[in-house]
Length: 318
Image (cartoon, rainbow, N blue to C red; front, side, top):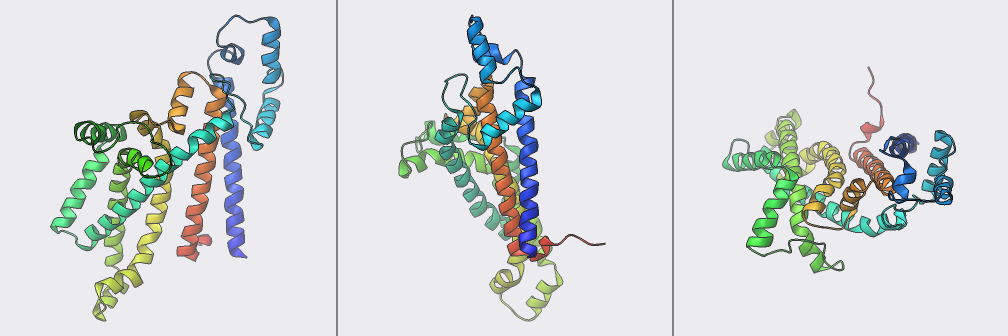
C-alpha cells in the first residue's frame, strides 16, 4: 500500500511538473520576436484571406489562456502542429529523429556505468595507490574538457587522422554500421560523465569502507570480494543510481552539441535548426518531449532507489 502511495505521489508531481513546463513552452509563442503570422508566412507578402486563415488556425483572436488550452488539448493527442519551415507534422518529425538520439544517449550511459563505476570503486578501495592516482588524474582531465572540444578531438584523431571510425552521420540500420558511427559521439558525450561518476563512486566507496560493519566483516576474516558484494555494494549503489539518473537527463541535453559536431540527424540537431529558423511549433514539441523524458527518468530512479532501499519511501522525521 505504501509503495502504491509512493508511486502515486511521484506520478502526481510528475504531471504537475509537465503542466508547468507545457505552460512555459507555450509561452515561447508569445515571447518570440515578431508576430506569429509573419513567421508562419515566412515574411512573404500575404493577402487578407491568408492572414485571416493563419489567425484562425492558431486561434490568435482568442485570449491567451484559451489558446493554451487549445494547444494543450492537441498536445495530449500528440498533435503539436506543423513545422513552419517544412510544413511537416511536428510529431512525425520528432518520431523520425527520436530513435537515433535515444540510441546515442543509451550507448553513452552504458559507457558511463561500465567505465565510471568500476574505476571509482577500484580507486576508492586502493586509496593512495598508483591506480588511484591515475584514475583521479583522468577524472580531472575528463571534468576539464567540454563536450564539444572532446568531440572535435576524437573526430580529428580517430575519424580523420587514423580513419578508424566514420567521422559524420549516424549510419544505416541498427547493426554494426550504426554502432561504428555512434562510437565517437557516445565517447564524447560520456567522457565528462565517466569522470563525474568515477569521482562520486570513489567518494562513496571510501565512506562505506570506513564504516564499522565493514571493519567487523574484515575482523571476521571475510574475503574482500564477499565484503564488497554482501555488505558494501548495496550502500554504494544508492547514490550511484541517483547521480546516474541525473546524468542521463544531462546526456539527453548534451546530444544537442554532439549531434552538431558529428552531423547526426537527431532531436538535438533538429532543435538547433528549429531555433535558428524560429520554427516555434517544433521547438515546443521537442521541449515537451524532453520534459516527459526527464519525468520518466526521475520516476524510474525513484523506483530503483525504493527497490534498493525501501526507507526512501518514508519521509524523514524529527
